[in-house]
Image 1 (cartoon, helix red, strand yellow):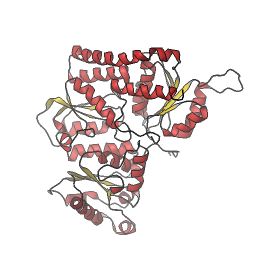
Image 2: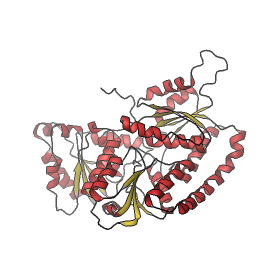
Image 3: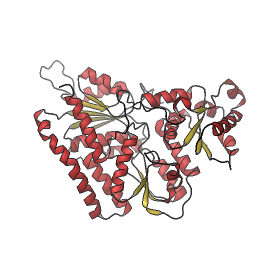
Image 4: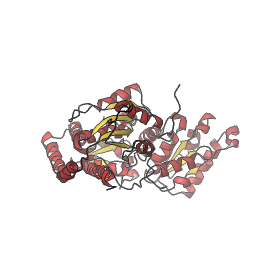
Length: 446
């Protein structure tokens, strides 16, 4: 039996579905769930995601059946049909997506019966079962993507060899998703391709609707969105690759080379793109040389977060910034196979660093792992331990950072002590922003 999770870092699958749909252009989520589900999810997604805000017809304005005792006894399908009809009538959208909570799934409501009544209407209505017991936010994200790829994306027999689709940067759960998508899209554009990101700036539902014309799907994760890519390939015949989330020179170079190889781009062209990006990138790092040495800014580091971010952050710290990320705590719920895949992303550092990896979802254990890795003073007068240290994690890690007396930067969900707009850490340009944030944290009290 699974143990309980103290201070969870994720909302449930329903929350993941809500979060994914609320940032999909002109898409209206319709909740078939108990009273209170939508409000609870909305608060978690807003206040713990860099103060995201509600968005269009989301947040506290979510359409919901607010199922109660009557629906539990007599079933809620008629109530759902009524809610769909009223939502289409009152809320302007181009796609209406029904999602379910735990209670209505437990009583056996079949949302397909209600959705079928709107077949052939002026606007498409689709839906999926997303009860919270299916899993966490990532599961809801995956369910929504698979449903969209099966039921909304149109078949395309002719492929556009200069078009690719990008996902795996999970909206809202990655608080910096919008900036990150823009930065990764920019890298792919420099390779000569147009990019659908579905959830980024300037995207429309037509980008999603016609995405089967792409020549390749790029999943920027080894764990999130891979199942959806398999569905896309089965239904639309578009192959996919999964690549680790890139931060900094070493991560970005590997990303560009793997994508270039999958697309059949000449190595010489990829080399030129990388050379230009490196020239830009290191021209700014050169400016840090004096202050980095004079103020002794190198640190031991602990990285806490999901499998996407931790591998990218640790490699950046070790191979680009010259720090010592000796301990990484990965907070995902992962299968043994997924854990093995994730472990491979922490090997082969240019710096030779080999971080200790721990898979644990409980916030209270972080201090224990730090003490276990660096040891305890046991009264030793000159014991250094985790010093000088730095923690990159979520707002949950602020307490342990204060207890240990080390600086901390909040970069993974939940984030309640920063306001995030278009900031992103991916690629070369994003790594410069990350460097600014890390070093500013160190010198901010001077």
